[in-house]
Image 1 (cartoon, one colour):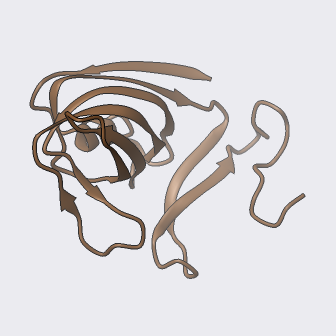
Image 2 (cartoon, rainbow, N blue to C red; image 1 turned 30 degrees about the horizontal axis):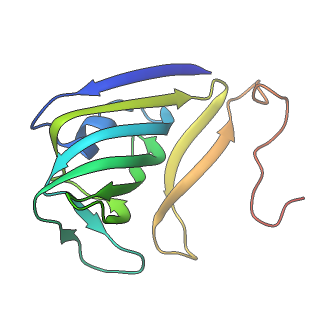
Length: 147
């Protein structure tokens, strides 16, 4: 595994900055930790079609997900000035207020992509061992329904 610690600065778009870390097809990583603060974060809640913009400053309590050259799937939990917590999918336009400190991890030997899934209708994560390499453990990635 290789690690990429990031510190984002005020005004940066959190999602755009994270997606910029995976530029080549097949490259990708997982966000394993993220803290910091945002102005007016934009979230999409579970099963919602539209995004919601929250008003004011928010603290990032947790950030996790996957990033590929085709896009990201990121979940975030934020707290307002009264400590009320809300979470959802991180959307574009969520600007860093003071800082964002993030740790991403890339699994060596694996190709991460987002491909259309006919069942969900969305671009979903597709994990594949690189040719000639069965990943660090010699095993194929688990899929739903596998033992």
